[in-house]
Image (cartoon, rainbow, N blue to C red):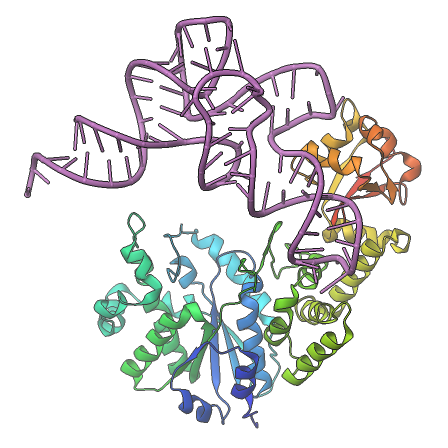
Length: 437
RNA sequence: GCAGGGGUUCCCGAGUGGCCAAAGGGAUCAGACUGUAAAUCUGACGCGCGAGCUUCGGUGGUUCGAAUCCACCCCCCUGCACCA
């Protein structure tokens, strides 16, 4: 198997390298096929887009001819990583974490190739070895190699040690030892010589390179990726409606596509380098074309398409684009009954109503209860500006007290769906069965 | 414990007896403009379709009327003391 010796240069060009151990040596090391790993702790039942950069990084390495191992932290997830966390985290129960481990295993598997080739990916769970070791062995064989003096000087736990009232438990303080042990273990049993991770993992990674040397005399490397930041300073990966998850049942492909489509101009080319497999030259060309065109840039659409395809596949992308097209062109006619079923499933917020729900209530109440706005005032304001539509019919202010009329049977799509829109982007799908059940 | 300062609507922060649902800024929502953008401008912004209802750390009081005055209590900050 030959390897792409330009990999690190490409990663540098993409701005994907924050730190690495043994600079020049790592370049040479990667001239042969190697095994590398990245860990993902189960802190929820899905990963979110914050994990996308390392996930894609594993894939980049695999495409370049190296063997990726995705480690799911069944053990470390029980402890909690204190790195750069302001507060001690609450522990999740073992059975909950075990359930999350299974979900994450499936999720990380989408991003790398398994098959029969020499550099097929592997998914491992550190509970398999950490769960075996007993306390005395751990303290004597692993703990002895760590200097507390050294550990308390790590930037990642500094604020926890210095901060009044926060503190850090012995449990979390031990986290670094577990992660270091993982690296040593993977080196020993899988010949893994490189760990990658977000830049917040630097301390944990170097802990692992040290431990591997001390335990097995092996030289292993670490490489971190920058934290994804936005030009406007707000946190990446969050919207008003919450975290952008990789799981389609938590963040629909449509919502996912929309997230990327709304990327600011100032960030979009960087994100193309981070989150897609388009070459840096292609991306530079896109940027040049956008600059020259003087109109709406094409980069956001390319980004949204590429990333949605990576995470949700061709089918997910097609659905996302079809829904986008229908919603933003205002042409709901093109939505088939099955499209509406899909919208109901995971496209837009959905509420099922019955005719009885209209009794004694106003449209504002119904829409607020459905979560379209936080107060009736907002709906009222939108009504006054003609910004509320039900199946493309603008609702007048006076209709507020007549929800039955707003959701009249003859306005229904497929005699039960009412796609309600407030403003330009807020949609809500109501379903009302005409039979009074 | 003593002395001083302070707790106001999502956040910051004005307000010291009626003109206060409470200035101003931020955030948020809607409209215009636009590229489903940014910037800008406009409107809304305690709750209620509305009549109206409920707020200014808590409880009670003074008053025709209190975020504003009084009493007690709770919490935060600053200095001093105590402890060491």
